Amino acid sequence: MKVLVAVKRVVDYNVKVRVKADKSGVETANVKFSMNPFDEIAVEEAVRLKEAGIASEIVAVSVGPQAATETLRTALAMGADRGILVQTDAEVQPLAVAKLLKVLAERDQPGLILLGKQAIDDDSNQTGQMLAALLGWPQGTFASKVSLADGTATVTREVDGGLETVALDLPAVVTADLRLNEPRYASLPNIMKAKKKPIETLTPEQLGIDVAPRLITLSVEEPAKRQAGIKVPDVATLVEKLTSEAKVI
Image (cartoon, rainbow, N blue to C red; front, top):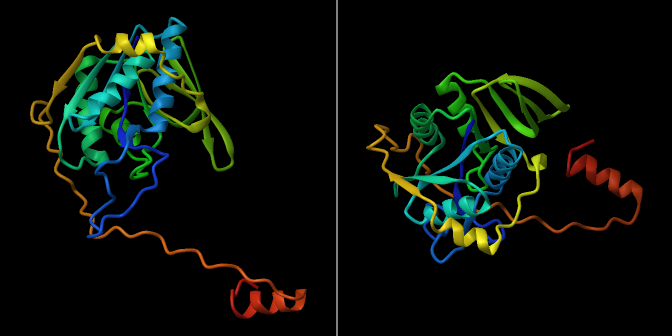
């Protein structure tokens, strides 16, 4: 079975994000980028499926600028077999990514598509759901456990009330949650091997998809700074302030 894994190049989670002076977005010049952490979990799950003899090939896909090749190389070093870069310098939103992945899925015919549940830059949490809807495939989102057997994926999902287990007929779309696994570090030999693995470069135009943004960002602003707390002398003063100032009582 072939597994398709979508990976996104994002500002590294250790970087303190700064808003541009013109408030048009966040500062990306001279900033470290890395693979979206939830996508790392998705890649790890695909590699484990291959190690278990369930998956025969892992294809990593990224949509973005030429620099996203490095993100694909990371996925290849973790264990993916080949990469596909849909190269574009445009701002690509979830619907456009879902449409691109749909075309690639129809072309490559994977038995399973894995994605991170969301990207840490826009936190949209939409691409996996949109992709499943466009393909007409069953979906298991926020997965904390995935097992495959007899053409069925059993997915344990993290929901507000606890855990929910669903059975999906393959092919299916699954989005990875934080507790699905612990991604491995790529070893130096695997990093060297990844340099020789093939990466196919395509454009949205070649796939027949218009990636023009449907949403326009008017302004980006930092959250208001949290005000310092105060000490009160007794319980009566606390109750009075909660009643008259905070208005929570």
